[in-house]
Amino acid sequence: MRWGDVMDTALITSTMWGGNLMIPLYLYFGGITAGLGIVAVVADLLEDRNPAYNLLSKWSAYLAVPAWALGSVFVIFHLGKPMRGMFFPLFFSNYGSWMTYGGWAMGLAGPILIVYLLLRHFDMQASLRRLIGVINIPVMLWVALNTAMLLSAASRVPMWDRAFLPALFINSGILSGLAAAGLVFIVLRHFGSAAGSGEPARVIYAASVVALVLEVIEAGILYGLINNMATGGPMDEVAKVLNPAGAMAVYNEVVSGSLAPWFWWGVVAIGIVVPLTLGIVELVAKRWEEALAGAKFACILIGALVLRFVVVWGGDFRPLPAVAVDTLRDLVTLFAG
Amino acid sequence: MAANTRMKFFVDTKRCIECGGCEVACKNENHVPMGIARIRVVTVNEGETGETNVAVPCMHCTNAPCVAVCPVDALFTRQDGIVHVNKETCIGCGYCLYACPFGAPQFPKGEAFGARGVMDKCTYCAGGPEEPQSAREVQLYGSNRVAEGKLPMCASVCATKALVAGDSADVDNIVKERLATRGSSESPWGWSTAYAQS
Figure 1: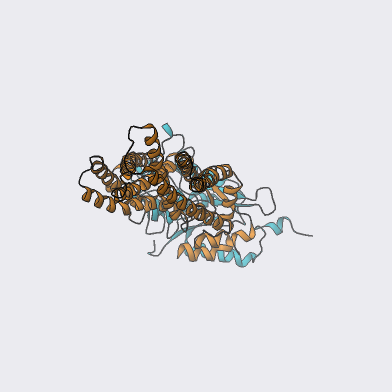
Figure 2: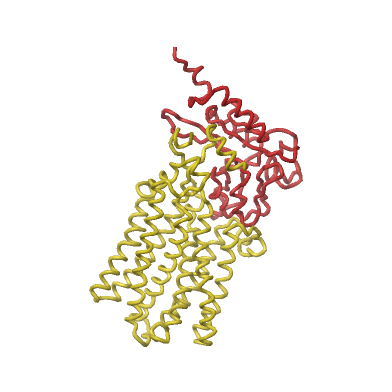
């Protein structure tokens, strides 16, 4: 006999992180930081082929540091005791917790990004700079991965499914970093004094192709996450035994309940459908490339922000594993060991 | 206390009548601040056939997920299985709330500038890591009935004995006895007596 067989699912609702803007904003800026850090290095490596990549690389590096700083501020000040978060090496002693790894990820990323930014700004030590940049890529991936694993470690939250969320946030982080860099590149070329050299059109074209590929991947991962919830999939062993209907109840909240407008308009329409359409039109029509790419990148940035909010808000819905008499044997096995 | 003692709660959903006695007793015993519910009664299928009530305290899990995710080791499991929070080291990140399948961790509401304080939860009426029954322990965690050899107040006052507390072996025996007495019927306990078909 299982909980879901005898009665409807009870969802615990809370407004712990979802009601607080800081966690979604940390996840957003953490992801953008990772994306910008990677774009800066890749553009740096491509600069010899096309000098126009210099502008993209430099502005990615310029933007990565404030994005990192904002992410750090948001994650530290969501704490009840921010000072202890700031001095995390002294206080974060549980190395089984993803929050500890998150502290180290953000703590390491900042100094590396700043050193890279200085070398990039003054165009110094190209070999050393690129070496630091390449070393920074796994750190950036770690930052993006951690924004997902921080959530996915709470394995009883269906929206934070470990099978999909890490891939979704890594992909979205790189995509939004690329979008931020691409948007600034286009704006500077038009309105700034930095006309740049080389072939900027090829930079925009390359960024658009990569963005299109990442958009398709993101759509696939998002479908996987939502579909898995719809079929009750993303539950660990405890949750499967106690409340198989829980994931489906959360799915209903996301696609047709209180989160539906944010999910359909913000994440799916603005974040995926519009950028994909603009990207395809841009590549097929071969006209108004910069305008289309700029609009696409702006939509990607908005969609990525709404995605973080929907994921965190969705985490506020959790199925309650009831301690029913019928499930005692399962409970003893699973909890008591 | 035996070395293998493991203190547990068990909630008999067939007996809970949603009187709220456990919630009141907990608040009174531990001077629980406003906005914090160390135990709460959740109602499922309210107003419908099969309405069920579940009192939900911290279940003091053996492999507690909250302990696993706490970055500062503020949560820990005592030798007798009770999961404690050290309010002196908690940083109020809220991670434990999401890890907990029961939503047991609580956080103060209405703090200045929306700031979140440190976590508060059911202590199994066993105080905290401070000196037992010291003024500091009472101030931070409430009473320490376990140190006096008593059971948690919520279970002590439960009129229908829906909330059972004690060593896991004893709790297990009580549940087995109840199951043997009432069989596998899905009706609430006492239902057949109160609404017997004539």
